[in-house]
Length: 457
Image (cartoon, rainbow, N blue to C red):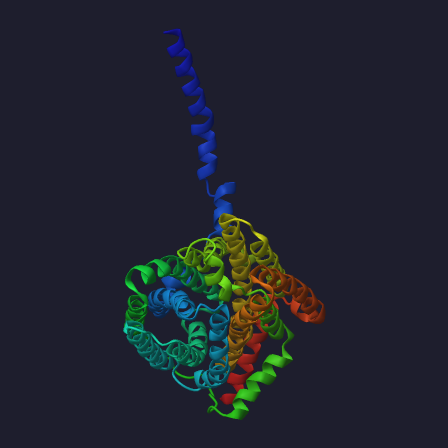
């Protein structure tokens, strides 16, 4: 009885200390935990406020799942057919030229046409590309040249699609919601690039590459349906007809703004030197073929973690400095991946790299959306696309070439070192970029758009 009474007293004491005042403090609005959650949690208010953005988000979420699968299966199938890391790296080379040309054209078209219609047409073309990949994979002897051809067509269509998508989004939400939109778009991408790559290798090995390409085609169909439900978006006020002169105008604008140049060059440096993805199929041979999906997925795991805790980014205004630091951390993590001696450690460093890249991406997207006036948004989105796609395309080729000459580890580690060094050099060369303040950038954009509207009246 005495033991029971003493135990009962301890229970009452525990409830009075931990179940009373402490829990009340924990659940009050001003508690430290609540404040921390509010600071870190992703902001989903744009999904509630805008029906059209919600539809766009859902459609692109579905299509990104299929694209994430093809993103893994295409180089995987190339390696299975050729047994060459150099051939996998050359996929980036054949994609680069079409992307480079069409991004400029796509940007000019996005500033002149209904952006929603342009997205519809390009996604229809991407659906047909998936069906052609599926037909080739069904053959008894799939042809590697077909993979390179379709990769080039995908890159060309993406050059038209991406600028229109980036230029459409700011038209669907309020200006103050743009940082939250950047995080939501990143969430959409990262969730799919965790799930898609993680199961892509299993699906390709179990059901064949054709099945994976078929899923990608079906995902585009779902996206097309949601796009049809979004209202048409009129071209910007005083839209310029696409021409070489209009493209040059966008290039001149980007060159004049050091805060924009910084976003392009910092990311280009990081992705060119620190992009080891072309080596994943070869590296995975040491851990089992199924691990290739994990290598592609882990950067997205880290990026998802950074996205879900991205609320703090809305309180940081030195966006250029944040981009620079994040790019350097990406390079350090790639070095860690290159020297890692175990699978779990390699995956950990890839997750860290993905988190750093996502922080960089969130601030870069915010700079673009809060700085560039609407009548130039498409053309500058084309330049943005060139900056963040050139690095991976050519970086994969560089990684494959260095690996063929000096080995896998030398390729990965040297690329990470050059990424860190390059980030520091660019920070010194672009002082206005590292000092850029997002609040001033938004004011500058609003003043530019108001002055243009006054001239057009």
